[in-house]
Length: 153
Image 1 (tube, one colour):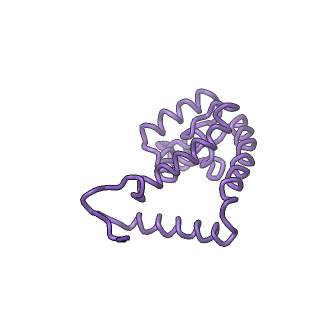
Image 2 (tube, one colour; image 1 turned 90 degrees about the vertical axis):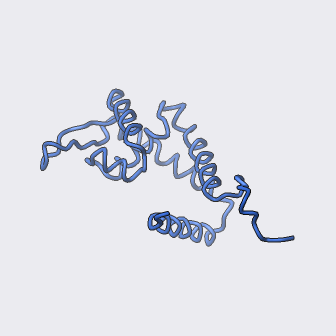
Image 3 (cartoon, rainbow, N blue to C red; image 1 turned 180 degrees about the horizontal axis):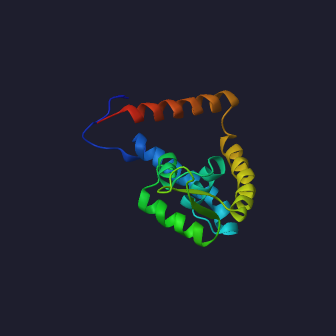
């Protein structure tokens, strides 16, 4: 059996970017079911709330940089979260041209309910890997992320 690849045919199911995307979609949609039904929050909205739970009072641009969510999608999601009063937006004290976003009291209470569920799901997902494999997997993801950030193809 040859280990050479036929470079003229893309085997999508074995192509790393595709596999990572499919895995990400599967994992995200499974965990999204936890909060979609109970809180009516989309994956994008939860990612925004998760960032704000860790980094309150940041701008939409900073959220976009941390989540890699396209700015137009982020803007629509922020509008929905504002309308539902899950987040608040004010002008930054140090720069009145810049707005900052934070979780509202309601948003913080939703966040506080979802975080333990998220960690529970993560533990269940990683259960198929040993502790050493989990540490190695995490290190490999970090390594791939850093390397991908440095590529200019």
